[in-house]
Image 1: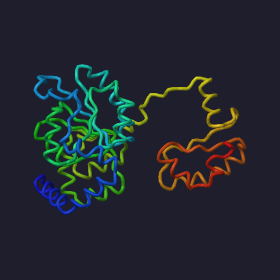
Image 2: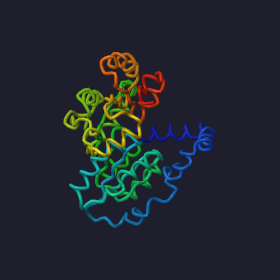
Image 3: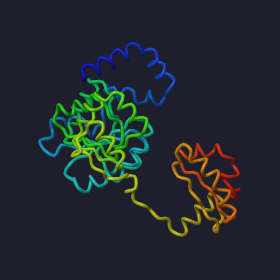
Image 4: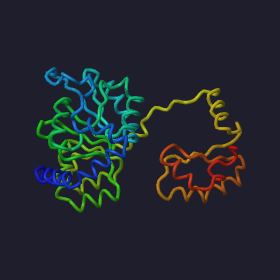
Length: 300
């Protein structure tokens, strides 16, 4: 399977080369990450020269695709730091914004932060050889055949945590069931968010003994409560009256904005000082499509 996969990759790159070049030219974010993910630019100094250093207690490699996955991984990484203090922890991301958030939230808890390689066999082999992990943990998504094959070849266990399978992804996996089964069977364990996710992995051929239901680790984040004075300053900054009640529409999904549009005026009738606040990404962009009077009622 891996030979066929890499053949498709090669043909796709050759045919799509002009488009790839164009994407590099017009996308600053892709230009910043391209050389790192291809494996031709230096890895962080904390990782360089350590390939032959590890006799035991090799590093733990945690990978998160982008911002959402990085935030999900925060509590997990902190738990690793406490439980496996004798291991170094290397953390990889696939996007520039993911890197920025990882440096902001995890810099003191990991030994190195770097870009995850493109799934070319030479890129994967180079970076995996530099990391030389004892364990690989992938958060939620970003599962690729070459990295899985390389870890299997090196006899390194790989765990998928906070795993989920959307309806669209599930249909795609079922359409190419032979390849999906080969891919997911490489995981040592899959920690699914829900029973539905666990059942979907099982239907894709993952043995039931390898699938656990562990819930959504996003809910394991530490809550930092504001002091009374901080709350007052925050309300003043948002121009919200101290007596106003705030309804936060957090991380909305498609269709939920219409629900808020329908129920907010009725709630407002019962609580005249109620304010609806959209959350940061993706809710803010979606809720901006609703009238400004509903989104920011009574703020101005």
